[in-house]
Length: 207
Image (cartoon, rainbow, N blue to C red):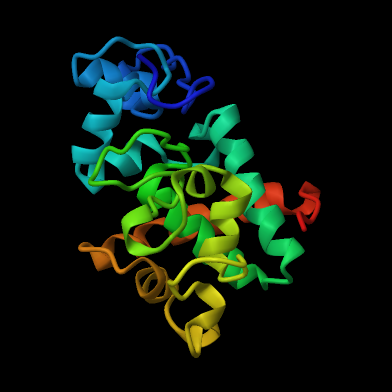
């Protein structure tokens, strides 16, 4: 039944004395309980569908800080950072990649499409030249595709976007992704910066 392999997407802290679960408001189990789903803390097909349809205001409560990412999703985020380091992508570029993956998947490596044929943490589509399903669902490979350093694919990645270093980060995300919802990336900029500050110092480069 699991759409993606592995464990919990996000942790859920117990509410403080006198506080309700609604007041704590963070984590995937809270989201599942609110939507009448089994509170497993992992992403099955029903939870994935609800996450895709949830409004941004709710998702910002579910994922209020990097602490709300589960171990597998955090490992995927670290891979994005490591690939960026290995390709000599500046920290600003790593932030942009983290923003994009956060908006597209919350770092869940989707191995089954939820929207059209989009797969992986960047929701890249085989039908639009991002690679094979196997390449897209391999997190290091899809990260290289996003950065524009993969030896395949027909789409411009980050470093092919002229002037990306001085553009607003959300606009760069959109220039790579060409989403139908271009304004949604910017909301995750601070989350991405906090995530890079938290994890970046201990992530080794991935060649």
